[in-house]
Image (cartoon, rainbow, N blue to C red; front, side, top):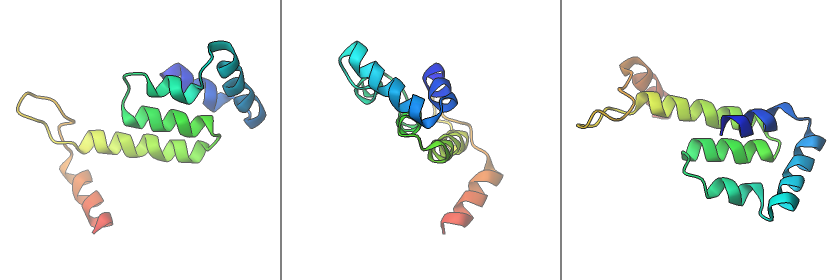
Length: 97
């Protein structure tokens, strides 16, 4: 997934669209459909789809938002989750209130 994002991010707008079109021609399905069939996080999916549309700033925002969400997700009893960051959680709560 990182390779897809890196490639989409590195191409100029005209080449990015050409790459998306070439993907469809070669594989018989859109890049979006192929990405939606993958077992990836919603953050990775949305960031990749936003990059494919050429919205680099939007993709950055999605990536940052996903990182913040992951970092502030409390641990569950089985040890999963992000572990939390009380200062960041409080700052985010202050922004959204």
